[in-house]
Length: 406
Image (cartoon, rainbow, N blue to C red; front, side, top):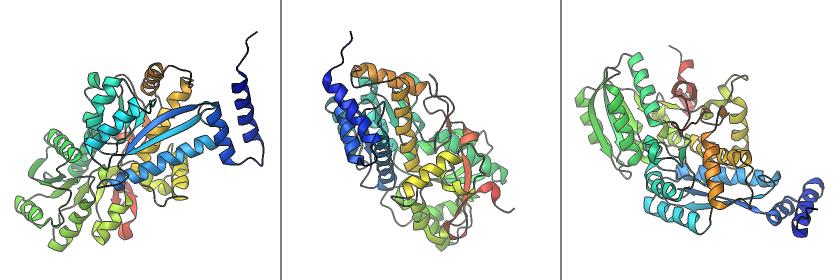
């Protein structure tokens, strides 16, 4: 007769009672889960520092999901322990965090980091240790080449897809000569590369390129050089908060060229910081910022609405960055469930199983769109189906560009 350890039986019984008893507190339920066993997932976010507008909503989101999972019976009936590290947007600190999560905390997988630079720094560490990493950053080089990214995934849209959508929109608007502004960090440099790669095939000339640092506050020299170039529109590619100074300076200087932003503009705080100068800005992003305007039958409506409700009920307005963390953690948890991983599963075996589960993702709906991953695609988002061209209307309201009056 197969005899289970008495301690395990008692832990499972305590777990069941905690969730069946109407008077049991959430903490009692979590304690019962811990007694049953723990599954650890690591997270690296820029919760503080220059990229906190990305990392803070990501950290909030991940902790909120972990709390809900544990209050609903755990993951595979085990306690989900989320180990969160703050890299302060420093690639060096992200590397240290990843090494600790892998070697000391022995996590099953890591979500994050928030920025492309930190993600690229962490990538070889996770790949060498064969630990699944689901980045919340956008640079395409995070998941390419695929031969060096077997354990590396990401949830934001590919920057090549964003560049193509922006250039296609410009072409539709009859623009053949543009200027590019970009932050001088990894995300901005990657965006410039994609714009340069795809502009020629779109029949668009890049007449001026202006790079800037994360601490710059006066963009007058950059904008004057752009005006002299004869550019018909400007693309700014950045995630740093000072990108909100650009539309202000454009308005002050009377620069009439339309301003396009990258998906790194997908936080309402950036729009608020730009004030009324943000009106008219166009940018491609997921549909989280316009969920209220989606028709009831839209395939993302339910997922987006639930995430927005949960987040805003506790923290305030959502951003697409928090959505990236939601997708990352939920994808990892989905793989853990699908592969029926338990604390008894060997650590390296569990990590490999999660990697396989992520790669097998098909038609899974997240905040960024519908994910279809494969051995050759570790992002899994379709350019046209997942991205929406948005614009900022009066009062800072974000709307689909397709709804803008002609």
